[in-house]
Image: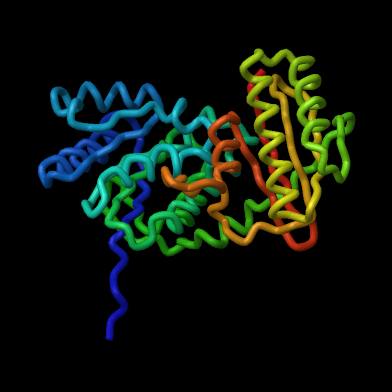
Length: 307
């Protein structure tokens, strides 16, 4: 007896230049529209404009998003972009172009980006959804392209389509589950359950770092949610830390627990869900979230805000 074939398809498109980009993406969009399937495109602004022009009037039939905004924090792409679109069309095949990795992504952002690509395979198992992920081979480092081969079971380029022999998304998740060293000079509230004290320290340090009033309020929410998560689901308390560096304000909470579900913080909340929205909210508010979890080191959630 043959095992059932997973309807989820997750190809990486390796392109070089605008012509190859359009050749790999436009037929994908038009094929979906011709089949009556809902289609979304979430790519960086320049490529979004390129596709909009090429699609012409058909662009109005496609959900178009600038990934530099919608996916600025890779942790919000699955719940806020991919699932947000696919879940509004239950029982129907859907097509999405998602380009979460581009040359301007920083070294701090990149591990979260590649983890996102690996987690897509878990988030959409069994779903009749195709997510095409373009990669600019002329602008990206060869190591990034090698990671793409490990996070995508199918590879597409100018020569055609082929299975990826390097496909190993769980291996990628393990490899990028990196410890997050704390810099000297971080302000720390150690092993605490005092949410009010953590919020107060967050307010003072974020304001001193030059964040806007709205950002300061967001930092207060983030530290509250992260510390509450440590108290309730971690080791019963957490250590909150704050620092500013390289134009960013960083807030993190560490506890001695371990995360069992790799999609924690990326499951969309249902309208009638009374709890379990905290980490989803953290991903929504922060410009970047990095996570490390292990039996030996516990769990660290680190949230970045652009000052």
